[in-house]
Image (tube, rainbow, N blue to C red; front, side, top):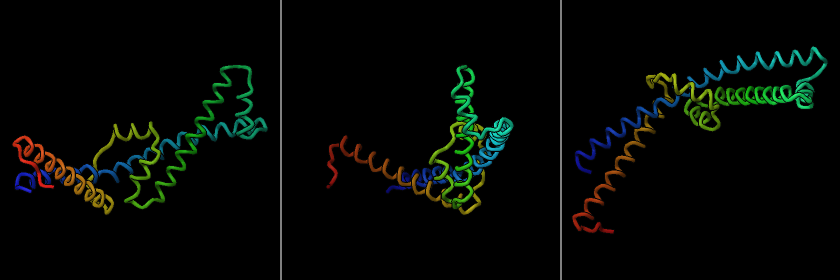
Length: 172
């Protein structure tokens, strides 16, 4: 590898390391947003459960009452409430997985099944952090190696193309 190729590989490695080192910070900001979403959904779900109990129904009985209504609005409202309850439970599950995961693994947990709304809003408002944590350093190293490999492979491909254009066949 020539000196220019080495410089390009190092720059690509540093760029990859910088980008990947932000994965734990993004996961942390996502986790904070999930907490806010859960708090809001909890208020809605608990209010629904309380209203159901006031009418001597459990949650499922109340949802069945909506579903069996002859009124389209009430049936649609029941579907909407079921969707809210499902999202609430899904976010709670993901929050637990994020809380119990090792710091280095949190980005993988996040990538497993992110909530589209929370993910989009986290991305929109994301503020990069300095990777002073162990997880940030690990992800930075992964990105550095990945950037280095991509640059090396791109350089290898460029050399092969240049050799073919000159009529020189690479040795196999």
